[in-house]
Image 1 (cartoon, rainbow, N blue to C red):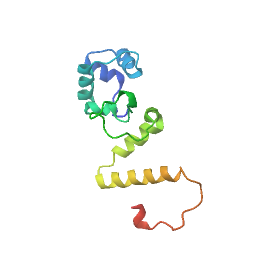
Image 2: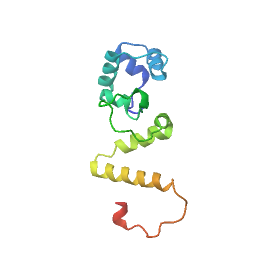
Image 3: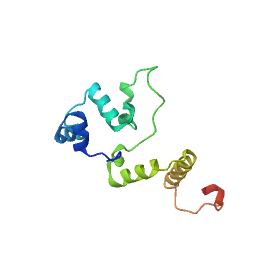
Image 4: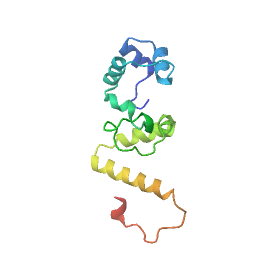
Length: 130
């Protein structure tokens, strides 16, 4: 849904039925590395696209191979209607500077939600928003 391709069209491109694609998507069937690579090519995304936001258990991280500790991330939110709409709208913004500012705004709103609801001491200036 995020890239605007139906399960049926993806299945056709891979030589699979849409039911098999559904099984992959729901995790009922495992996906091998070569199949994951094929799916990434059909969807025009890098393979690591499918791993974004996944957190490793501390016990499974190998010293020297693990990146810095990932930030908390709710992957299930991305598969909701709101998550898909938010991602589609965000990635439809062509100007990278505007995307960065939108990201900063969303982060600020998220941080503000973690505090009490008292108003900020200083009002925002127009430059703070754009």
